[in-house]
Image (cartoon, rainbow, N blue to C red; front, side):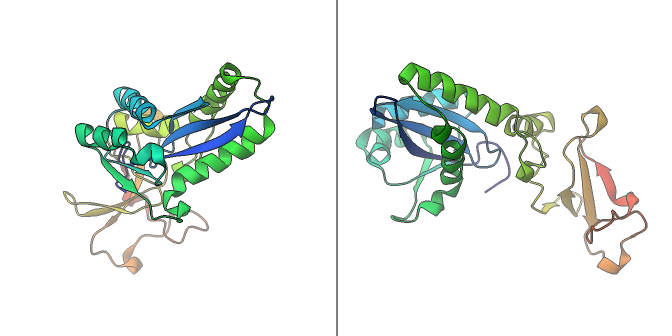
Length: 232
């Protein structure tokens, strides 16, 4: 997946019940790159038409995704959703039957929601569920750092793409710059003044030619100070 917001979204349902035993479900939509929860819609019944309306509203707020991933649930395979995909021009990818981990981003988010919220909270009615879910989503997006995002929150990580004109990349991946012939591996996302710090390795440079005197202790891949570049 290209490391940018809206490259790919994942969606899935998670189920729970109210204090009176009546069941409800939550439609979750997650950005696979920024880890943001773009929508968490609870209701007692959610049809394919409702899914299409909710996705349209999310696109108006966050922009259009390059792809959406889901399972083969009837809400996603109905004629209303097929027509919505055709009209919106969005590529919809269905995972293989019986392979839920092909939708791993949504499954991981659903598991976190169940462990931290659903299993720990008593919901009395739909309004109560909407309010409590909204509070948890706000905390997840805006207050909780993620190690895979360089210990930024999902909202802050997504905002950095806009601030740096999409130059920020996933810290776990190597990126090659076609213009300068560099391999860029970010080690930090934001320094003083809003600059982004990246370690760069010059193409064709042998590992033994790297200057090691300023390498960080325990970092076998650290480069010399001359290889620190501000790209913000």
